[in-house]
Structure formats: C-alpha cells, structure tokens
Image (tube, rainbow, N blue to C red; front, side, top):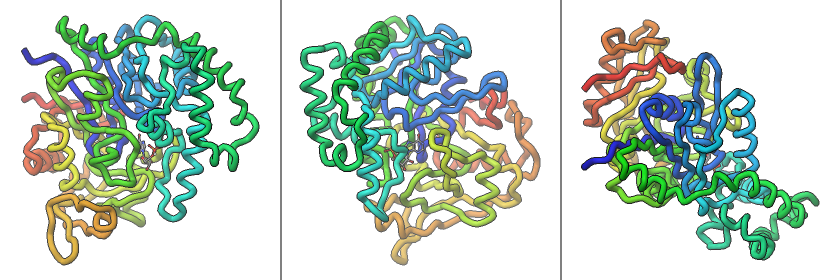
Length: 428
Ligand code: IMP
C-alpha cells in the first residue's frame, strides 16, 4: 500500500517558499522530517501576522504536537539549534517530547564557520559567496570520515581525540585566521558537553522512528532544504551547497527506502531568485530587477543579502521535476508578479549558436548560455490573498496553466501571499 507520506522539495536555488507550503501541509501530517542542509536554510513562515524564520527546526514545529525529526543528513549547529529552541519557547512554542535528532547527524563547529569564510576567500574572484554557516567544511569532514557526530558528544573518552583530529584538518586556517577563543579546545569540549546534556533527551534513531511511523500509517512530511539547482551533484556546480538537496538526499539523509515516499511535491516560485554567485540564465537587471526584488521582498532570510532575480526558467524547472520525480507543483509568490504588464518565461537556451533544451554540463558553458524568452501578458490586478482558483484574473490563470502545460505536471497549490490563508488549492 502506498504510504501517506509526502516529500516537499525546492526546484530552484532555494528560497522557493517551502516553509509556507510545509507549514500548510503539516497541519495534516503527524510528523515533519528534515533530511539535509543546515542553518544555511531560512524557512520563513507567517502565522497570525507573526514572522518566524526557522533554520534547523523542521517547519512543522509551529503546529502544536507535531513530531519534528532531524535526520542524519543535516549539518547540525548545536549553538544555533539551542538559540532557535529558546526563541520559540519565548513565543510559547516548546519542543519537549516531540523533537528528535538523529544520533548520526554531523555537527557544525565554530571552526567550520571560520573555515567556510577562509576557504571561500581563497577562491578570489571565483568565490561561491557561501552563507558562512560552516556547511561546506562540516560536510567535507563528514565525507573525509573525520567529522564529529551528535553521538560523539556523549562519548567522553573519545571526544578529545576526535576534536584534536578535526583541528588538525583545519590547522592552516586556525593558525591564519583563528583567534584565541577558537583555539581553546578545552573550552570547546566543555561547551559541547554542556550542549550534549541539553540535547540528550532529543537524540534518537530517527530512521527507526520513521519506519515505525510509516508502518502505523502515520503521515510523515519530508522537508527539503535549499533547492535542486544547489544540489552538490545535480546543481550548478561548483556554485552549489555541499549536500544533496534532491530526492536521493532524502533517502540517505533519513535512512529510509524510496517506497516510504508516497508523493513528491515540487516548489517553484512564479519567477526565479538566486543568492550567491554562479550562473543564472534568465537573470534580469536594472530597474526591472529592482522592482521585482522589492515586490517580492527578495532579501536573504539568513544573511539579508539582496537576491538576484529573473524570469521563470523552464529548462531548469523541467530538469528539476524529472530529477526529483515530482508529482505535483506548488507555485509560490504569484502575487509578486501582479504589478508587471509583461512577463517572460525562459523556454530554452541559446549556446554557441544553437538552441538547447538541456542544462549545459559544465559551469563555463552554463554561464555563457542566453535565455530564449516567450513574452506573456501580465494581469495588472492584485491577486494578494486570493484563495480560490476562480478568483484569479484570467491572465494569471493562463500563466499557471502555461507552466503546467509546459512541464506536464499538475499545479496543486498556488500561494498568493505570506499568510496561511493566502493559499489556493487546485482541486484535481
Ligand atoms: P553554503 O550552503 O553556505 O555553502 O552556500 C553555497 C551556496 O548556496 C551559496 O551561493 C549560498 O547563497 C547558497 N545557499 C545555501 N543555502 C541557501 C538557501 O537556503 N537559500 C538560498 N541559497 C542558499
């Protein structure tokens, strides 16, 4: 029997509005499980006018009683998680008895954040412009098999040795840019033990918990972070994050088989954004870009950086849909396009004198590709807050139908504002 579970994955460069869709869906789920990324993510959710930005906690945490799971694929910064839990507690939301962190989740240490900035600076003009949350160095230590995992904090005898080993890997950076605080290993061990004591009740075998939930027909929501184009293998390498943001990352990051995923929902904005450097074929600039950025409030929720903006890129979207096996689409921020008389959609790329419908395999080619655009009439009326498909202006509906037609995937949800209520569910 097909499980009740659903995966929610970003199909662009992150910031697609996954937080809102996950929050919406989590009302009907028993548990929400996060499988990749770390505090580089910033899932924004607005509830009763109050804005929450979640970095590590699964977005279901805002719904009372929902089980929240953090899988082994997540790069966990215990300092940030602690702050996040405390800030929510101040707003009356507690996680006791419903938050579970896999014992194999790798830790992000202060050292990794310093290494992140240092390593990116060494790239000079080719810098990735990372979030500086220590993601790359923590994942690199993981694959080099020297990383520190959640369970290691509780193993006093080996902790010191393991910390020494991690430090030896980053010696050059620690010596060049680290201050005395960073170099104090004893203090770090003390702090980790203190954090470990606080997190002890939350640490669990998350894979086993999900298996148990699925076996008892509970509905689990698998929460993606970042998006397909930032996937370390399938994205715009090297301008990517260091995790698998796509469906494969879900299985390895939670330790569960493909048969546990009932349905895959792909999230795309009605246009496109990117933070950080790297190719962006349908990017726009000048006043138009400024208008789109302002209209969409396109500033990084973690770093505050202005996001680069552009038209919806169907080449990339179709690729993301296929790679993830997307069953239905959620299109977010439709209302941001309300003010534009003319819209464009990128249908294919022009590269080296030829048209292509595929993603160029290497970065220099991708960077050179030009968008082949189709002009589409705007709707010139506000759609903000519309929550019925029939309420949408004709051209807005046409825009949605066009995306569905071109991608051959049904549109299931349309978001017309940040509140929970500004949501259209398209009945199948
Ligand atoms: P890192 O994940 O911090 O290593 O950053 C690598 C690239 O991914 C940079 O261009 C970041 O801006 C981008 N990135 C990482 N996480 C997110 C996200 O949640 N939203 C958008 N961009 C992200």
